[in-house]
Amino acid sequence: MSTSTQAKPKLAWAEVSRVSVADLAAMLWTERALVLSVGAAICALGLIAAIMAPRVYTARTELLVRMGDEYVYQPMAGGAGAGATPDMQAVVNTEMRLIGSGAVVRRAIEAVGLETLYPDIARAPGADARKIAAAERAFAQNLTIETAPQTPAIGLSFEHRNPDVAAQALNALVAQYLEHRRDVLVGGEFEALSQQTESLGERSVEASVALSAFLTEHQIGDFESELAALAARAGDIETQLLDAQARRREAEARAGALRTQYNAEPAQIELYTESDARRDLVAAQMEREQMLSRYQPDAMPVREVDRRIAQLEQFLAGGDPPSLVRRGVNPVRQDIATQLYGMEAEARAQRGRETALTQQRQEVRDRLRAMQALEPQFRRLQRDRTILETNTSAVATRAEEARTRSQMLGRATDNISSVEQAATPTQGKSLRWPIMIVTLLIAGIVAVAAGLSRGLMRRSFPTPSSAARALNTPVLAVMPRAAPAKAPKAAKAPKPTTGKPALTLVEGGT
Image (cartoon, rainbow, N blue to C red):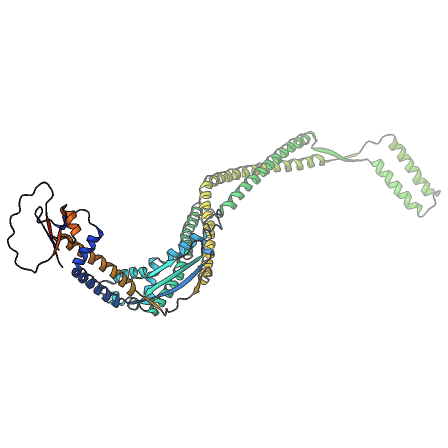
């Protein structure tokens, strides 16, 4: 439909204000050929894409997560906080991160094979690292890891064009995940403790060598025993020295007393005295006894002997001067001299003993002072060795416990249980219908946009009402469009007036 007017002969549709829905519909109807052609072309392309879209198979599996010993806190030193466990949801989140980690995905791709899993990527040119990275991205896009809140379960699904490869890849992912989590959660402690044990062992050997060199340098066998022996020896020597001094003083005192007694005693004394009368008396008495064996007591010879005995006794009773005196060495003085010599010898012996003990005491004291001066260094070396040996033993014990625990946890994965292995999916899903629906939406939008754009650029009006609104003049008549012919040169339009045109003619036609 075309419109002519004396006021605005070349008014464009784009300059029209207040467009109605009917105007838009009329405009699209006018441009129906363009709309249908554009829509048909886009639909054809979408149909081809939908037909060529491959069918995708999804393998599914589910893991049940329970709290395990690997999440129980075991401090390296001390017991503070031992036995603490994290929240169950945190454990599930950690396991999900482990499943989707690059290391696990890379291991799963290597287990299945890049050629089997993504042949297009395997045949593409480029370095192996780029191919592996592209395969990891594709694997991560096709892998879905999900869980429900407050639920100790993890759902896994993997999409692939080949149903067997989908199940194989998902099972390989689960197997590599279980192996990787053992290395991550329980495998590192034993290696760290083993390295620490070796380091402490080397330092302990160095401390022992330093202590041995110290003892050898100062000619010490056993520092503790020698120090204790020197202390005991010093005390024993002090006791013996005091005893020697006491004995010497005692011997000197006794020797002084004995010397006084010795000087007071005479050198010689009378041993005994003898007289003739007394000897005769004894001889007469013996003779009488012999005669009694032969004679009677009143016999003449016996009475003669008795008379002589009586005379001798009478003579001796009046005083008998000794006729012979014997003198000799005073035995008391000799005994005192013997004791004096013994005490003097004892005093000299104790004096010599005291001198020897004094020298020994000085030597022991010097050695003891030297040992005491070396004691701080010895204590430091001994303390370092003892601490290192204790720590080495403790860390070695902990390493062995960690190794046993790692082996036990490595053989048992009871806290991560697979509900069922991924089976080969029998039904696949295709993107044909989504592609077709999206294609129809896109085709409609693009076709309508193309029709409206072309209609807005035309210098004509689709309906009389649109012309009346655009020109602000009434439409008196609608004439069908004439056959195409060379249009005569249009007359020069009169100068427009400020008021409304008196007449508007509208040509109508399809």
